[in-house]
Image (cartoon, rainbow, N blue to C red; front, side, top):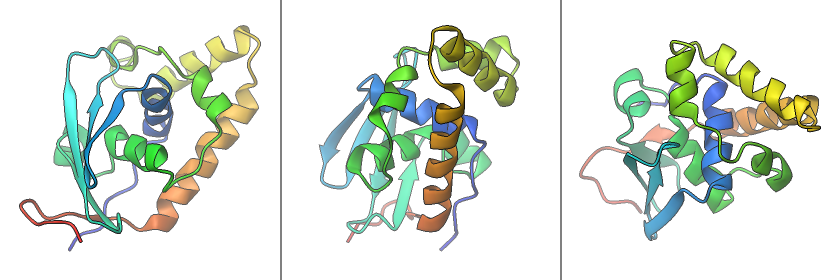
Length: 154
């Protein structure tokens, strides 16, 4: 069984936005669907009963081998990773797909653009960055394994 690679920090922000936008819906005790920020794609996430093994069909998870934002969003929504809902609300309604295209998949630039907007709107950039860092550390500590396709959770 293989460990997941750690994602770019931007995926934490995207996952918080997915939770804030209520784009995570559970389809069973061990599966969920996560809508993209543009709501034109849906990703399927599945996990073992103890959530030590998890999988997703989003491109980052499938092709890059790191935990994509749909996996992180599910971990947030289930409480496996704790987060501040106030910070998540600041990341609601962010068009991540459009921003990633605009910044040519330079995720750091896209995140910086979003954080500048939060700050300009009176939000606390430092708190948002600290929250993303805390979530990242929780994700590291989980040491998630890839759920083998076709295998039932348990």
